[in-house]
Length: 482
Image (cartoon, rainbow, N blue to C red):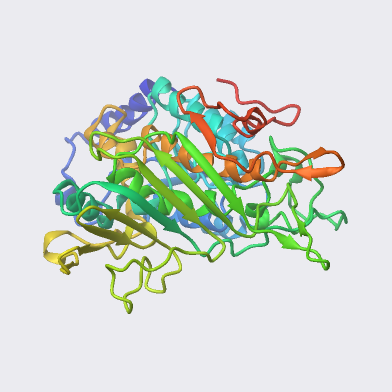
């Protein structure tokens, strides 16, 4: 249904109400607190309804403020709770069938594994459906670029599900930085305790019985075919390059968002990684190229910007590795989260800004020894509840692409796309690190080098083999048609 048709449908509802009852539209406040006129409700379809998909569904439904008209999940075991909650919603296993029957749908949430984000989202946008997509936006750099361009071409209201982007913590840190309190930044540390799922393991070779009510072929989607295994589904798909994007893809959009946004960063120009290894009994390191590594260290280099007139080296660590405690921060203070398991440190000339996951717990440490914490009186709330992020998207969908509500979204694809590309650059380096070539009967690792990146053209310029990870090869029968 076109945007014009969508507006016509809403107009028809309003006109019908006027004709039927012979009255004008009554202001919402007159009808009582919590009243929502039928014409103000979005008809929303849910693609991916288990786990995070269920909470996304509940957030956009917003206690009846909108309609859940269709639910799609390849695994009806995972979707059973959603089906029970909304028994009148149409039920699908294949998103393509849902889109064929989408004349009454205004907007769609996509909360599937990473490898299917792009194909589902692009297909929805091409039918003029507004989209809310879980992080990371896509599985590959090329897919992120395609979705960013498609959102602009089709005039779609978009939002990526990194909910901290709408929180007050990021705004506080931006205010501190913009007022010059820490001066120019040239070093950033970001870290996570993920993965909390298996990584660095051998590809399974046994073939257990497939789960009932699971459409495995559609679950695999555009990825390369593998037989069903519980090491892939549910949840453990994150640790396999065929489906997931590892710890960096999972948490990068939450943790790298604050420095990327605050410093106004663009595409990185260089990337370098090293990874943790699994050792055999004779202490020989073994690498499993299909599985994400158990831990990794990555450095991304960004050029100076108008906001920050210095190049920035951003260091990412995962697998429980974290940076050392800066001297400026008292030894008994946690860095990042309260348990220091995840966090961000931005080091400037005059001080340090830190925060935890989702931009929570922002703190400012000045070289003078002064410690500044946010004041509740200055900001509505330090960390916006999770549902605030999708709520803002819903309101933007109602207001339209050209609205101030849409312009105010914090993670529409014009921002989320480049952020995702930058994060996936780290994965490109991690995967290149594991490339092995045999030379004189010895394995060599040519990927263990600094990679130079041409962001505009999406290309590594000094190591051609790494470019195989920029754009994935889709399984026969699948394509990203844009």
